[in-house]
Length: 258
Ligand SMILES: [Zn+2]
Ligand SMILES: [Zn+2]
Image 1 (cartoon, rainbow, N blue to C red):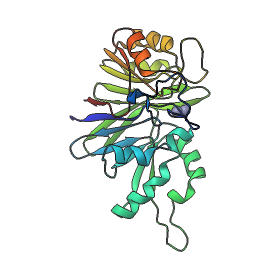
Image 2: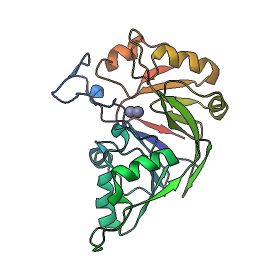
Image 3: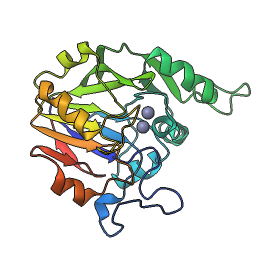
């Protein structure tokens, strides 16, 4: 299974610049500071899976010239990860088929409540079903076409999110701490793309700080740690020059091979 992971978005929930043209500490002249909401694409020659459909979903797919995904994976219920799911209606119109959405039963309950029309055909038949829910375990396997993805649980404040491993890359968006079992799932990874939405100086109850990530990676031992979910308070170049060896900030459009 050879393929690539594309960072579709590495911004935090507000993106950069945030609404109101708020750049925070980010240099507006650095193109890698332009960050859309958190998402990645997993792509092999014949298979495409998109992880999370945030508010920038349409823009991200068009920017990377992607077609209709074979499946969607939703990591958790927060709006910066699901609010763009409505865009799948256009792919349904173009492809005349339904799209599987892999998620835990907790995520499924909330998504179906918020977007019921995506999962059922309207009474008059005019609006067809767009998405088919596929329930996944916190520790399980997702198999879509040529892609084989392992899931693991993450603590994200008072809720849990799904972490995903494909080959020797793991994607941990929206994580504060990892349950003990998840460390075993991350054994042997080379690249860890991980939520770093908090600066060292301000602790965040739902997102890991760089210090907390370094601590977790002392056990995981990924050779490269790529920071994602970055808020306007974290400038690309300052991070790039200030992080320890092996650590680097992500940016939209960055590609990793697996
Ligand atoms: Zn988020
Ligand atoms: Zn979240």
